[in-house]
Figure 1 (spheres, rainbow, N blue to C red):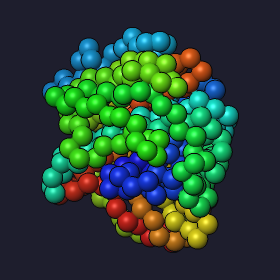
Figure 2 (cartoon, one colour):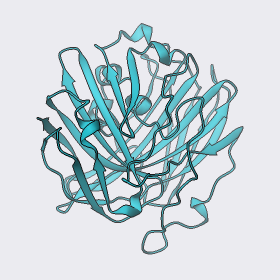
Figure 3 (cartoon, rainbow, N blue to C red):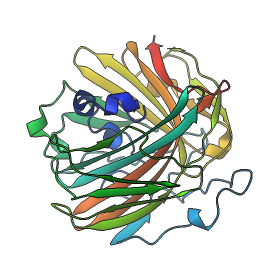
Length: 319
């Protein structure tokens, strides 16, 4: 998922994918439920080889109020999701910054959605065995989305500097050589203001991890194990999507990057229907700030690669 809908950058480029995807990771990145605090103490990822994480990876003061969300994995490795994952009635924003270099070439995108009525997106969320399941109905009509303006949106990541204007559909989108970052690079996001007050926030780019094997068939009655090498700030997200005649169903489980593996419990997998969809693995970092009544999240993501350098974001069959 280059985020969900499965964050395929190409999907993000289309409005249809935006509408089906419930705001992409809006429905999936739930390290902390909206309106509640994370459970447990934060777990800091170990610095990667080469010392890529330096002072830039320390908490960064943001304007207005900043907090960085981190989850604590339990003994099974799955990061506990807070119990209340309902969408807020209003004022929710997600900004996605994605970058990666793969055997087929570089891929990147920047997407931003400022929702005034996320609770009306047609998606519901629930916690299943420590993972977050999201169910989204048929595509919404653009007019019902309630996307607000934040003025001009600027993103600086690594050596990239990008400025986006709000598009006719209400979102902010760029998928053509948008950004390029390395693990540990600071990422700065700012907006000149509109319906949302001006703001500036900072987060840290995750490192790319390498997945040793990623099967294309997922047996829902058995635990689904993903193994990787490398580590990163933030979390490793395993995202699974099944498409049905009524819409899309998603499952996201978060893991400590230092663990080297994540096991999606069968109790969570059976909550998905059988069918075809997609599976992806990536390292993500999430930073949240409050801007007036708005909860604004910046999500930086780097898809994992397989041992051949291919992006781990592909079709899958769920049995």
